[in-house]
Image 1 (cartoon, protein in one colour):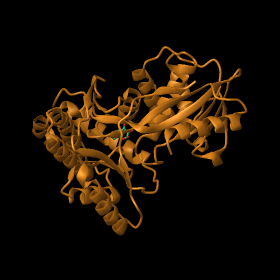
Image 2 (cartoon, protein in one colour):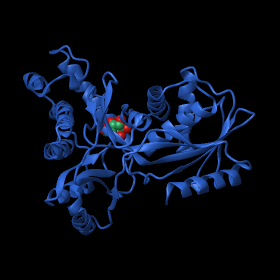
Image 3 (cartoon, protein in one colour):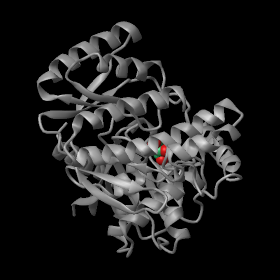
Image 4 (spheres, protein in one colour):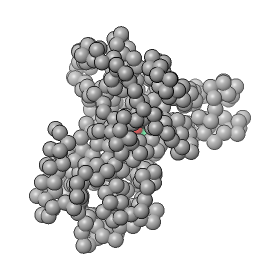
Length: 393
Ligand code: GLA
């Protein structure tokens, strides 16, 4: 569906549901991470970009302290109503917990809403694809409040408040990458972000005669938050041990050579592999950004492949479906690089594929996947888009 259609349908549903037209419509993007996975909570470098896919939100201020929320994607869920004075997390409130969490985080940081609002969202990110529909919803909620209540807040803090909502309200211990990529996205650019300092720069994604292809495993949803939080605590355990030998603040403070000097301290094989992933992934990310800058796409692709292997074998966040997609992609001569992207356990791969090989890529990877997994994968040509903005009103 074209985005204009999504916006006009959203405005109509808003008016039908809440009985008055929306005051404004905003958008915030999802993201795809090119390289630098599971190191945004280890002080590492990441290299994501915002997508043109994302979440739209229509809103209207209210005179009282009620917030009413509805989603065009889940019409059966109806309207969820809460008071600004009772913003508790409730499992049964589903996606609206992200909105409540952001309102809560803004208030905690000095941006309290005096009045409630009606809010209807409509997302274009495939559900459970690992392309950060939740971060886009958080950043959208922040953007909408900033526009509607003239909050003098910047996008970096919009991202930080979104992360705080997710960590402290929803209970998912994510790093800053997804919210930062959404809030700070820029058309045709990837963001090279140092997650230890939040220093960042934009890098043009120049793929010459190649394209960015996202492939969705379409793996049915499973609960991954607990496995994610477990990886994070394993990294913290490994860090506590290595700190005894080196004055480091985060695992990614170590170069691969420095890690080799101290790795014998990690007598638990699981902790050793988790830490090795973090250290080597950071080095790969820094090298990949240099390679892209030098126009060396082949090298960038090789580092993507190595990232997948490390996530599969050392960090153990891949799954059979993602491995099949990556391995089938590697077999095709026109594939420059292929890896899982995002948290893992399902979701998507990101691939750089020569334009002339894209039809063959879709056919061969698609057929092999269907044969081995039993259902189809979906293919998208990724377009890199801008960060949050008002689209109407
Ligand atoms: C999820 C988290 C991010 C990041 C990635 C893995 O998307 O939300 O903070 O840790 O996983 O790189």
